[in-house]
Length: 212
Image 1 (tube, one colour):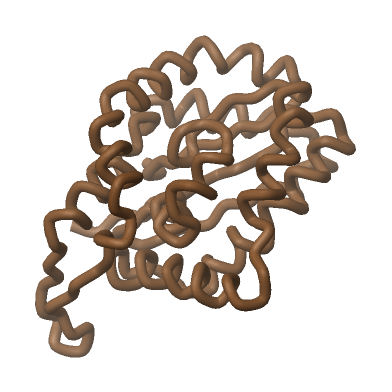
Image 2 (cartoon, one colour; image 1 turned 180 degrees about the horizontal axis):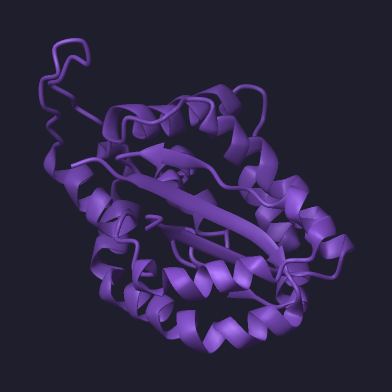
């Protein structure tokens, strides 16, 4: 069965963040709590997570994941906010017109962009990003406070950047049948978005979900 996993990361007015936080916030925190053992497992041995694929796209064979990759997929690909898609769309509709071009919306057919970014960055860097695997509702003050950590998470050196990018692409394409170009959207787009949100005194809405 095919689906499109989409990660929307968008600046929103504080009043929008305040309105939707009571709706999405408890579900995000429940997911964080529910997956703590899987989080600890990934932190203990992130190098064991990788895609061992048995498929050949041209032949249409099936993919197989090893146990650690299966555990990571369970950790990172739950999309607990799917049931709130109407509320998410309503919140996104309230983004001011002059902010709309700032939003990021990487997608992946049969996969999860936020999970790919986590696989690429690894747990130490990924833990610096707010929210839980792409899901977040932040006020403008929280966005401002998080900026140094967001910059640190994505501040990759010349040697590290291609390694991280390759790991993001690996999870996008081998695990999710996605577009390798979406790796650059995330690695190169999040910090400029975050800085623009700070400049605009905007909050931030992040949702990893499967559009209905």
